[in-house]
Every structure is written in structure tokens, then in C-alpha cells.
Image (cartoon, rainbow, N blue to C red; front, side, top):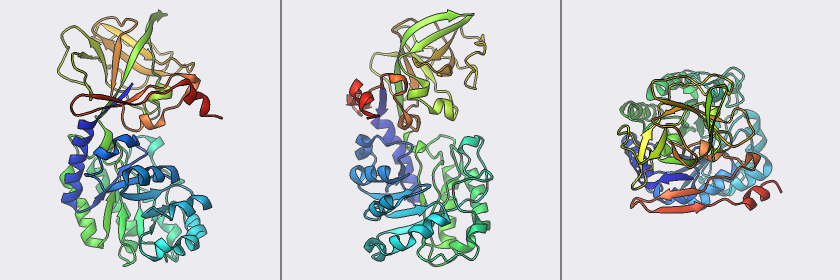
Length: 410
């Protein structure tokens, strides 16, 4: 079961509200990172709206967040543009060719003529600061964003914003590096009176304890004062980080060639794909009756439960055929999912005792990104989704059925 803590979400959005008010900027929820719309009412007061990665996310923002809608997608078609022009507030384009294709249609729309719809262009500052190639939009030959040389001598009529998104789980120092590149290559455009907003995208880890929020505020204020533009930030992970868990049950425990395996009723591949894609390893807790092994707790706790944080000695996600390490903790176990994929593995963890069939494990920090990517691969049962209210009450939002699996593909 996915369980999301309302109290933890509100804790994060309070921090974000303080940051945006100190910086004088706008801050929206990136739906690609967190799209549990039944939680939107608890976020709405602290945020300015949502950013969408296409038409369906934009409709979700319009229908359920009901504030500003900022839309960017790598490409649109005619039907997308026709519908988006009717309600989105910013419509940002990925390439010069897309803008040329739809410029006439957009600029003729009554909402554009009346000033309710503004258009921008995603730019590529060609400045890589991240460590994971899969998440680097500034890699050579990237399909994301327009480079400075592509805009030389271009007719910019109709555009009023620039948009970059280059960060992923990064601090304000990487934003400073990126802004220097943006100013060097695109500062002459920001100086033009027609440009009124600069969208700095997401990837800002604002709610992490070690994030330099004061530096972020300074950077935003400096850019706004220098170029007289309104800055927009669109974090996703910073809103939902440390707010949710995935509760799993042990279905089987066995040994094979010296490897101890536990098969869970949840899948890394189907239910937490970011564990494999990013990659990262969740903290895992064993729910038990013995005294706790430490003071660390998961993001969501249930009354009467005692949590033992498992040792996590091996940072990379292991190859399915690699040996399980022999750490200091007593019982090293490889946690795997119930699909046929050989690499459906969460990682190697060590517990204070041997796992048994029926044990409950809590995978921490599962509310952001990986939750919006879930699939029904292999027909594995999809975990229910629940909210934990501030009074501890649990509300089941969705309990998936066979019909959900059946109807997805026909």
C-alpha cells in the first residue's frame, strides 16, 4: 500500500511558501513528480499552481488544483494546442520548429490577444551539472530545448518567456552555475522588454535539510531585479520528498546458491521504477515487536508499530547474479519483486532477524516520481493508495482491481 502523509506534505509546502515569499517569485507543483490529485486541497494555499508536461497533466491541474497552469512538452499536436490555449496560462515550446508551426494559431487565440495566455521557449544552456546521464538535458545533442546558436537572428515576436530545466536533486550551487551559463548565452534576450518571465524549472531540492535556501532566494531576487522578469520555480520532488511510504508483505523466503532471497508482494520494476532508473535505494524498515534498533522512523508511522531500519551496505542496485555482501548486520537478504524480470530487485538489506513469510516491510520515501510511473506489468496487483490525515486517520483513495488491469489495454 502506498501511504502519503498529509502532515508531511504540508510541512514541505510551508517551507516552499516561505522561500517563494522571501524571493518574490512564483512556485508551482510539478505534476510529473507528484500527481495524487486528492491531496491537492492540502497544497493549494501554499503554492501558485501546477506545471504540466502535456495536455492530460494540464487538465488535471485545471480541474483539481484550480490555480495557475504552466505547460511545457517536448512536442504538441494541433489538438493539444487547441485545447491548451483555452485554459493554460503559460505555454512553453521545446523547439523553434514547434513554435513556428503553432505561432499563428496561438497568437490568434482570444486568450493570447487578451493577455491571459503567454508563450515561452525552452532553452538549453549547454551546462551539465548532474551526475546521472539519464537525467541530463544538457548532454551533447539533447532533444530538450533550443541552443543559443539556433536563435541567432530569429524573429521572437509572440514570445514573452524563457524556460530552462537542467537540475535533478541538486542544490543552489548548481543553480548558480546554470544561471551563469544562461546569462552568458541568453542574457541579451532577457534584456528585451518583451520577455517578462523566466522559468527555472525543477530539480531544486529545496526541502532537503542541507539545501541552501538563502542562496536560492538571493539568486532569484538578483535575476528578477537585473532583468525585470518574474521567476517561476517548479519543484516536484521537493514537494513530496519524505512524505510517503510503500508498505509491503513478504511472500516467500528461500536460499539459492548461498543467496538469501525474500520475495515481496510489490515490485521494483512495476511499482517503484525509479529505484531502477535513477537509481536509488529506499530505506527499508522491518515492522516488528522487539525494541527498535534506532530512532530513525519512516515518513509514515502507524500506532503500535515498532520499526527496525535495515542496514543497506551496498549502494548500487546489485546485478541479480552478484553475490550478496556479508555486512556487520546479521541477516543479509536480497529483496525482490514478484515479476518475471530477473532484475526486479530493490537491493540487499540486512535485518536484525531472519525475515518470515507475512512480515511487513516499509519502503521509505515512495511518494515522489516512482509512484507516478507505476505499471501493471505481469498483471501484478497494484498497491492501494491511501492518505494518512493529520489525526492519524487512514483514508483509502484507490483500491485497484483485476478490472483496472484488464481495461488498461482494451
